[in-house]
Image 1 (cartoon, rainbow over the protein chains, first blue to last red):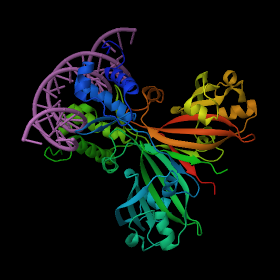
Image 2 (tube, protein in one colour; image 1 turned 120 degrees about the vertical axis):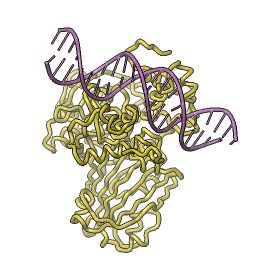
Image 3 (cartoon, rainbow over the protein chains, first blue to last red; image 1 turned 60 degrees about the vertical axis):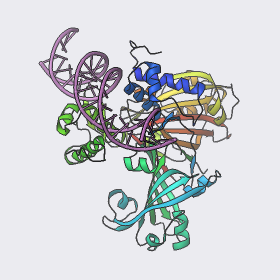
Length: 240
Length: 240
DNA sequence: TGCCATTTGTTCGTATGTATC
DNA sequence: TGATACATACGAACAAATGGC
């Protein structure tokens, strides 16, 4: 099974062997073999099988749960980005139940990227509202919203849950429109990873979005969204 | 420095300490301290500092080079996605030198996602052309292009390097237009990771794009691009 | 060219902690 | 409470890559 004289590393050989094994005999969601069993099966040290499993977790093939076991990973959702669309609408279009949970809200001083993207001066006060988006009851994204304090002064007090875009429209009469998004991919920090319930070794899709008031053209919201990459893909459609 | 009775893990404490240390006294591109020195500095096992450094590599704060050392990571580029733009044009807009290198070309049978997205039948022949994009001499993206065999039959023979979009236009008179992109984030496989010269632990941004012929509306190209996430971000502008 | 010191990478061994059922 | 499974941490040795002499 394992060639100890191959230039290919042992953990790579094991990772490949496991991947084949999975395709042959397991379904997404199945519990996979324990580290102990894999250790015996391949005749190597437990660290080595852990390293192999780690590779597959990184690639999104397996998932681990502390104290319980290792699973075959599930498939992903798609998230559509387009002119006027927002998160809520686009995911609902797939007939999935979406909810938005308020995590934290406070007033902070705008600095650096926040100030720049909202076209404010350093030190201007902004609302920072953190929300968690769940899709079908599962945590899918963390969103930090930044709003200039004056554009909707009641937002900090009044907003409790649901789409913030809808709130701005009904509460303050502001029709916000996405004008740009910057998409990147990184590993999550420990806090985000925990809040999203992510398997370790999985990256996040980070989207920084600027929203403008359709009437005045003023920047009314800047948001940083961290999507679980194993659940969400972004679909970008060109409006031709 | 390290609290061994804290519920916070030692490697997390060290990772945080290093992050502060970096901000205070290092610049992007600098060589950081060796594992040996960190081991002595924090009074822990080498595995433990390796784990801490691994966290920071995942977060894109540090980069490692086998046999040489650990560096402070550099900043990222931005890659703009918009209606008609293509990789070459959009990155050149930033005054950077871009080149495209042919890695492989062959004829394959369309199956699954490729057949579906090119609106072909399973088993129809397509050209598969793999290219490497370099920005400022550094590998930035791997692209697998899929073209229906009949839309530009000379492509497999003739195409050698440069923008494939430009080639299709000048050689076969096809003006291709991006109609959708699907963006996701995963860990790279070993081959892509090697070709892109990526530090291990870094994710890739994967973009699946469908291009249409502007005249006939026929699907003329499907491509899968794997961007180095530590170099490239995607900027999506809404054409209002 | 080749050798050496340095640095990161891999693998083994062992022990203990923590989560789940 | 106990059994099982994954997580953290320590120690030791050797392999592989790099750069300088």
